[in-house]
Length: 500
Image 1 (cartoon, rainbow, N blue to C red):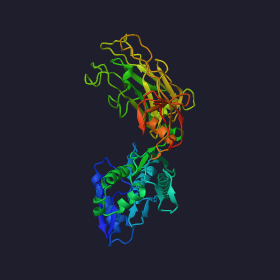
Image 2 (cartoon, one colour):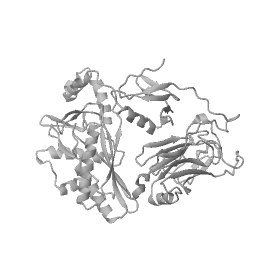
Image 3 (cartoon, helix red, strand yellow):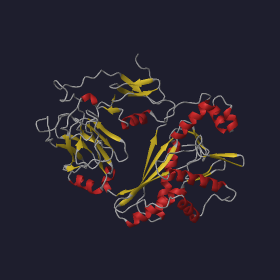
Image 4 (cartoon, rainbow, N blue to C red):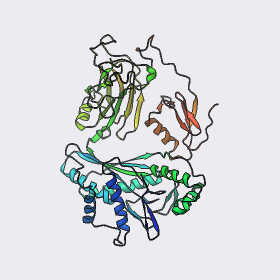
């Protein structure tokens, strides 16, 4: 996102600077939104608007001017979701505030109409509830409580402070608007990607950042600091996702659980078109969702990759990977699944049923014998299951209502029968046993780093509480290789020496 700045009374006000949060919008209203925010900042700091507040009629007129009032966001029977990027001064966490330079920030101006519309929807549509997801990230620039004046803060403190302010504000507004159920609030913290420190240290970087364009041009570190600033700015964001979702009572955490059934390891050697399976949750058939290799809306997991008539990729990707996702995203489906739970414990038993290939079948009229890779993400997108079934039969795994593993899994990856010769267990090099710690200059603790690696599918958790590396990744200066075992988690910044 390009910087925006303008001069006023010898003050430079930046669209995004050292600790002012920038964000990216993948939306047709992107440029309109930028213009809208810039207009508000100018307006609230102009001589014509000495007061920091705009009347509601003025706010609506401005929103309408920039096309922000034309779309119905919450629809009967479907609910809805709205992303609201927020802008803060460095070290501030209230939705509305004025920083030390005199710049006013008003995130309420965009949040209020969404709350109003959601409240109206909730009052007129029984069986729906509000949910707030706050996606927040911080750069490695040291945090400081500018608003409360309580000094330096640890990584994550500012994001949590903003989350608490947002939660209190939204629920107070909803209560005022006669909405009986408060919003569920979730904070998703994103790790910084730019981990390089300024070569001259933070005081020198801050001095550069506050200097004039002329001073920056003659500064020998200008190119370095300019590139670092771009990275730091991208790492800083606060985005509110306001969603209206079905009220599922005791099964609320089941909503949007995502089940994956994949062929995603080419070492197995699977290459055939006898690999379509119906996926059943407590005997209820599931339908594929977005992200599936062969498309959404299918009544089966399709792992055909033989390049024949039944391969959805045709001849273009023979032997390629195939991903299948099944999302529990509507109340009727979840009610059916839970009603069919014979344990009465809120469990979800996942099974498969072969859909025989009747064209050039190479598996005796049935399906292939390779076990699929099973993944499950919970209602907030966190990876909770990453495993293989123990045996090639109809049973996969059993989950609790929130998508956590109850039983099953722990299987061994084997070479496919499609490979010539007898099927044997995949020969893998013996991995190194290594400790793990996040980088001192990163933003996550070591425990958070492990969860991040799990969610990205880079590691899997073993029954003995160790972790197997599935795909290579690096934490400078070390590189963890496939099949390495992480057997110890050390505090953030700990020095780890790898074997030579």
